[in-house]
Image (tube, rainbow, N blue to C red):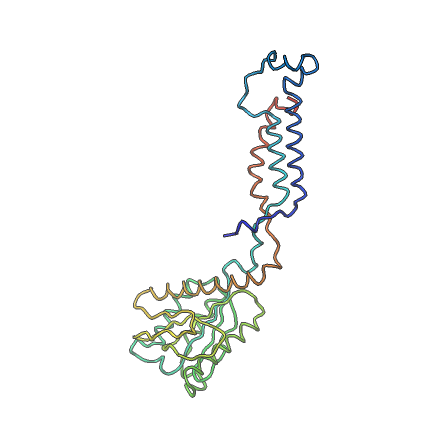
Length: 304
């Protein structure tokens, strides 16, 4: 919500029209008072007793409408502004990096049919809700590999995920879990930097374990495919447990959206000084048009 302290005018010189219009309106009223018309003919001490004032009309005169038009028109042209133009990436089409664990443990049958097979099915459900994202895919086991660069072809992501298996990885698990995850996230970081796109990004880590002690500047959302959820490590942004229904899919979708909005807000704050202020005068145009309509009525004249 924009703060009132941010309110200012893009073309403040036009505000000088307002006091000039008020002064002219006041002079017009003063000149057309009954007392002013008889001041030179009747003694001042008798004037207030002899002049019969007409009943005051509640309806505005053409001069009143003209004053309102000038006041509102000058305010409109002055360009009131209280917020900057939106960032070019604010259309919720950010990037998503899926980091998929292909260690042998993902073949465990304690989640039917296997942990990996269930992860593939759940990822299909998630991708169906995030078709506006540009996505990249990383697979890791003992080593980490970029499988697909950023693409908006969701079908390609789905087909590639379907064929990934631990037997395709050159090394399975020759390092600690924290080292394996750190390598995968380092590759995700490099992929983001090479992409040449400044839009916000979300990171989804799909694995069967929540690893402690990972040294990475990225803070992904972990989707854990295990029968029992592990405690949540502090370095994670969020930790979603597997569910038998679509509850986990919705939770991951919401977590990625929240992560995206946080990244968007951070980038917008950093980019704010370079973005133009939005002209809010356009919101006054309908009211200005309504005020101008009586001027089109036959018989209305500022000379009345």
